[in-house]
Each structure stands twice: as structure tokens, then as C-alpha cells.
Length: 242
Image (cartoon, rainbow, N blue to C red):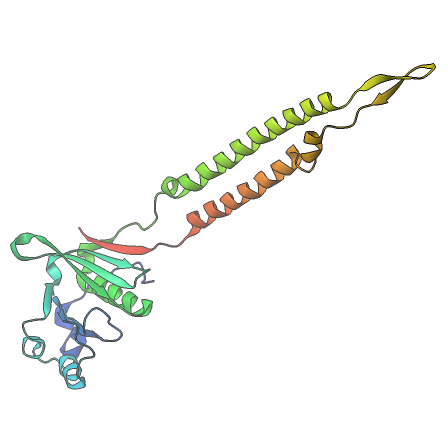
């Protein structure tokens, strides 16, 4: 990830090939060649790897109009209004003023995060102090809303089911057991206990304690989800023209 400090560029102090930074296919996936100058970006359409002599000429300071032709995309650095580095796709999205002051968008895709970071950093330096890095920390409530909602739902359902099961167990126990008098021949009746009802026996393995244990496991899972959402790194960095 690029350092969070912008550096301005003095065009008069940079001469020759040092004024240009070059990325080429296959390191560059969306175009065949990207040339970053002090005052502009110039990109050649995707047509495979550029010829070595073309790259050498561009790096040596040759005229870009002659070597890249009229099909190349040209973006003046002064016209750039926003630059977004997508850390998931290794791409730069450049918004700039096109013809007639309308906003245009250019997407530059790289094959590695190192190449995308390097281009973003160098472009930031070329843009200078006119562009600022937007705060990349996302809204905490927006991140936590879904996990907290799931946690509240788990707790509510667990408590409700535990209460219902507890009441059912108490009711079944009171109805299924008791002492009755059974008459015996020639003697007074003898008391005996009725067997437990089958419906109560079938639920013997499921009680409110077991149900609360399951709810605790589910609640722990939602807390892990919440922690990961709050601690995940940013997925993009953006520069905005002030």
C-alpha cells in the first residue's frame, strides 16, 4: 500500500527519461503501454506486448505522438479530478475532464498489486498537493449493522425457544406423573406411579440448557463476523482534486 504522504514534482528539476514512467504488457493488462509524463498520461491500445524498440524509444524520450500514434489515449494531469485504486482488482480508475468539460473515466488494470501501487504512488506525486487522499476508514455502524442484527436475532430466538421449551417440559412433567390407587383383591388399594408419557420421553434429549448452548455457539459466530468486518483492511484508496 502506498505511503500516505503526497510529494509534489518540480518539472524543471526532472530531465530526460526521468520525466517518464513506463508500464507495459503483460504487467499492464488493459493496455499495451502506459507512459506517465510530467503533465500527461498516454496509453496505447491493447495489442499484445509492445515491440522492444518502441519501449526503448519511449524510455529514451522520443516523441510520443510519432511512436504511439493518434489511437493512443491522452489524459492531461491537470484535468484529473479523481483517482481510485481498487486493491481487489489491481486497477486504477481515473476520472478527468474530457472534451466540453464533461467527466470521462479511464480504467487501467495491472496484473500485480505491486504494479498498481507503484503507478498510484507515482501518479499521486505527479498530481502534487492539489489532490488529497480521502479518508479510507468506512462507517463503523454500516459495517456492524448486519452482524449486530444477526446477534440480536439469535439471542431473541434462543431465549424465546428456551422459555417455550421450559414451560412445555414443566407442563408435560405435571401431566405424565402422579400417584393413583390401584385396588388389590382382598386388600385396600396400593398407590403406584404412572409411567412417563411418550411425548415427554421423546423430548428428553432436548431441554432448555441444550438449546441455550446452541444459541451461544451461533452468537459466538456472529461476534467473529462482527470482528472481521470491523478489522478488515480497506479495499480501495481514492485521491480527490481539491
